[in-house]
Image (cartoon, rainbow, N blue to C red; front, side, top):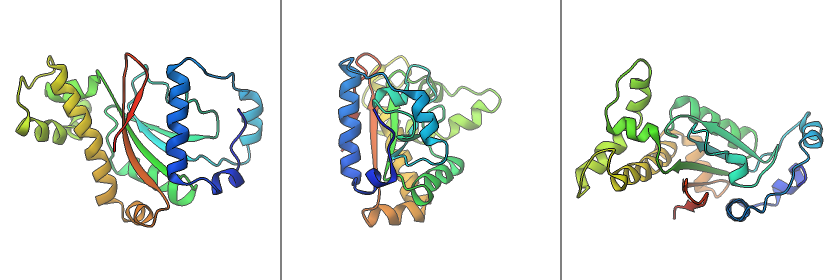
Length: 208
């Protein structure tokens, strides 16, 4: 794998990048990863970077984002926060990645068995964790209103439903709270997508 250049990124469309990430994830699930020459890539990226996408992921240690999409140094920005929600700091990072640095795709990546989602469902309150989980509570409330079944962290179906809604909420926050990114998406300069990572298979389900 070689270092991504500005010339290469310019010709990529947001849909091209979605397909690159899908192919990379397929490589990951099939254990078809190449050995990346990180020392060379570090030297080449020292004076500049041209990432194609920015991915907001949970901080869960079991989701090595670059490996999940088979990407190397200089390919993608990654913002990580427990529960992969979007607040002002993450929004600013997304605007920086796209408007200033030229990334063409934003992806919100949720995952199965998310402890932050489960903690939000359980109304955990401790220190700053309480504030953090409040960003996920809208998804819990939204799903609870319509969910037919046990509404607890012991029910995987309920947890998964909240996880999915939380990804959708994060996308909606981007579109409603960032005029910059909303305009870029409307003009076709970027695409905003969601995905759910399977802990068992390593596969990312891209949301339509």
